[in-house]
Length: 366
Image (cartoon, rainbow, N blue to C red; front, side, top):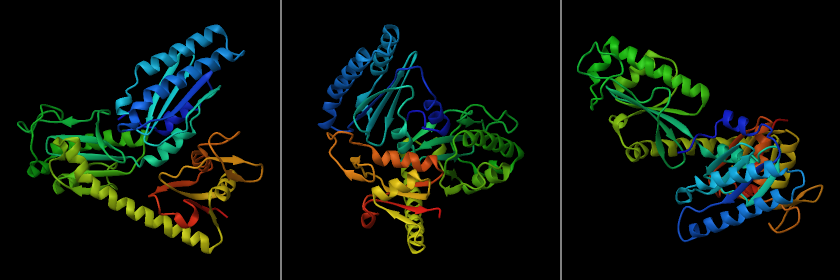
């Protein structure tokens, strides 16, 4: 799993760059046979980017060569075999970045003095990421969770390990496998779990997300007593996961995540229904777009895979083909970004949930 699309990462990407800052966006495919077209499409987009750079009189030869070199370095590091649904390449003088997104993006090349980030913003809003802390008698692991997998996180000192051979040993020692609930009754265990809680707090401060904790009941109870970061987490009593494989951890957490998501969707629908009764409600892409631009959205609900290409006729958004002049392929992502910019709560819901409101709806502030 690549670095998270954290608020700090997005803020950094939105900072102005020396012109030209190139944003190259391309939809990708997870499976054959569609995946075979991705390398060809990428070569064509790179050729388009180079052509735009060469044709732009505002780009000096030195900067053009620099940015082309950055694009070539970025593509040399690409792994399209493990691509998801969207690829974003950013390149500017002296730098480049590659992002794989679990959300499709429109195919385009844009030259500007900032990177085109709205697709990343929408992808982050749709990610449904979470943290899972797994505790055993001799090991504490932190798992970075997404929509369909978990990956062990190795930062802030994780994983924490200790030896059970000597109760007076330092908190981090040689690893020994096994859950031994009786070890959670001594002061050394309390101090060790306080270390874990402090490390978890640093991660949550940098990237706030929903938190789950798993382990033997005695371990979870002491963890909550020892510190504050895990105190309000959702507990999953399940031993062994601190030493588990990503697949085992995912199988244990997935039913809990699914149940939480069902409750969240029901809550969103109830909120929208109340807003409709108060006449503080918007439905359909055109109406929601206008309310988003006015900063009036309090809650935005969008179906997960809803995409729509439109044109702006000056007063309204109307459906369009991607080949039409001034067509906007990513209007849903634009709405999501605008809603987040104005402080709205953005929720993605399963496809079909919002059929009656044309797949997108909002509750208004007033």
